[in-house]
Length: 377
Ligand SMILES: [Zn+2]
Figure (tube, rainbow, N blue to C red):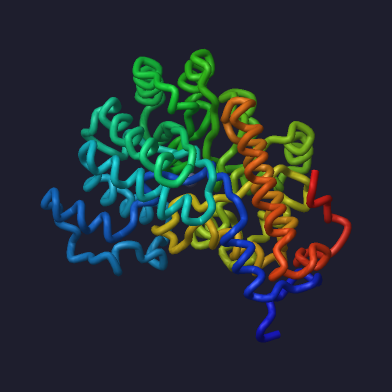
């Protein structure tokens, strides 16, 4: 099968059709880190501006995802990026570029940007917000992309430091900040210890998510029951526990998977390009959305994560559109904004369905069988 895309036993999509679909499908981005989305050329530019030595690295060599032996290796490169994003202008630039070139250009209509204040070292939180908010405003004006901010607590920090960050977020509360997250090395920070910080955030009306990429399924229940999370970043190991899986299906807990970064990092338990855990999650009936995590650092972008899943799992328009619809359900916009986002998403999906250059809707799916749902709902 040289000129076709191998499906999961279903009708394979022609490469042209797949490209059209992954580029044009409306997307809602809920798991993309600001620091992880800085283009390498921008890192090199900012390093020059601030006289930071990149150790001989160029834009071509900086993000060698083949070298991320473990999450620690990846985080060390991320620290380098954090070390050059130093002032309000830098934050404006990286936010604007992430939302336009790394977002709207791939038909991302809305993004909830994950930021990591501890990763920015000495930049005071209000200055962080100032630069990021300015970038968000101009990206909206220039491309129409809407966005908000999710503040990530660093699980390598102490629970007291995490609580202090939540207090800072509350003290400097703006409309753009809709929630908090929890990231960095999971092995260094079990989720339960951050319950006080998460409870405080909940009292202040902040929504909550957290990364659970390598942790056992019981951590998912800790996120839901002790941290008050309404969605989960990654969460692949949920499928190891049928009871917790069933609970998450019943409660329609959204999982925001990142196919390419998790596969390259081998954190998902596959690492062979099969994306088998994501397939298992979908087959189990879990509510899965996808995003790109740290796109340039893993050689991906919002369109490519859809492409990678389609190629590996035979997903066609129907399945790929479901990821976007799930992301709309999972996003933290208020109800009226969510309704208008949903309308724009459905318009985009319907435009693809009506596109004469694509196969007829019945054959748009690379999938197979009874898992098919109505395209229009
Ligand atoms: Zn992440």
